[in-house]
Length: 486
RNA sequence: CGGGGCGUGGCUCAGUUCGGUAGAGCGCUGCGUUCGGGACGCAGAGGUCCCCGGUUCAAAUCCGGGCGCCCCGACCA
Image (cartoon, rainbow, N blue to C red; front, top):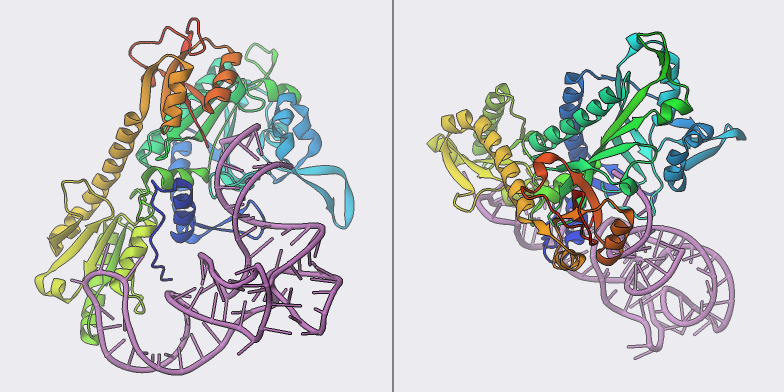
């Protein structure tokens, strides 16, 4: 569909830009039900590629996929106390079915710990059954008060991994391992470098002993939690009598982890790489990596250009490149250029009569460095040979740019709340400070600056000089990172 | 749930102050000419003016009530 208006520039209204770009790049659309959305083919194609990448990493770390039911007995959710406290306000509940009121209401899963533990308890008897490493791809429902496409909708798609281990140490190690898997995926596939670390007590998952998170810095300098990995201890095992017999013949509760990422990642991708012309999709996730736009003046040329385009597509396909030819004859080439740029296809090949004559193609990159030309005239053979490498380079440059942006908007050595507040009010970013560990300080900072404690960063992110002063006064016990968040 | 904005062809909106034949641009359909950065001509289709009630000879417009959406704040992958 032709769509010839410019997007609202990011620096004018980031939120408006985001909404427009999601709708007009045809990633998603609003559904008739408030707070839920339709994921359109271009957006779903990106999600499918994310699934492919993540699923491979899960399999590589020993997991299998399974599927657990959408409906969960209310009593299950209520069993773990902190868990129900955390989720009660956002539950959607089925009370009627088959024309009758149900004896026990059924919750539409907000997450599946409870139903999964119920089943695991049946399946696990011995330490020989452990570890149990299962993932599921599913939809979940959390009734949200305020929603935003991809970032927070009442229903969303995600994966949730649920594991059981024989020891606390092993489960903790697994929690950390999966956090690392997420980080790898985000960097290698999404070209999005997250900050990783431990959540504070107030920010952790309802029912967890410890939560770890990936926090990504969006272009408006707000933080977005893009993935979580939880060490659940024995909290759920106790409530669901998930026990196993140890090597020594003793009965013990299983040690659990759970971890998830969701279609929120698509929103994160948009806000990480998008520009005023639209979305920018990293090649590894792009449903179409190269779009060929044929150009002609008459039927003879059309025929020649078409067959050349098909040949190029076949040759690139052999090299594993995902190519699409835009053959629509009711749109001008210029119109197609704008559309595919808005959708974020990494490379465009323009192919017209002049190119056939010169055995060349016009290669246009979706984005490029300031010192390069976006548009290049390349001999056909060279283009064919180089495109896989060009895609790799494109992927790498996105990660590099995103990492540079994150670092440029990270502030270390901040010592007091006033300074933090100033940074928040002048645009925000990741702010590193010392913290005593006192929740009262965390609360005060939140009230005064609207920034929340994003995480206690992992070692590789910590400042070379560990802060000595707590942001709320007194001595620092650890370094933490603050930002306003989605 | 508070504050703000808005509901009129598919989209963006004008028209509402001061009641009187429902409009524009874009998009869409057909035909023709076009096609290297958002093409053009001609012809055409398309509307319970968010809903319900009231006032009136007459309501998109006035009055009452409701609903929905978007943006900003309290909760959240």
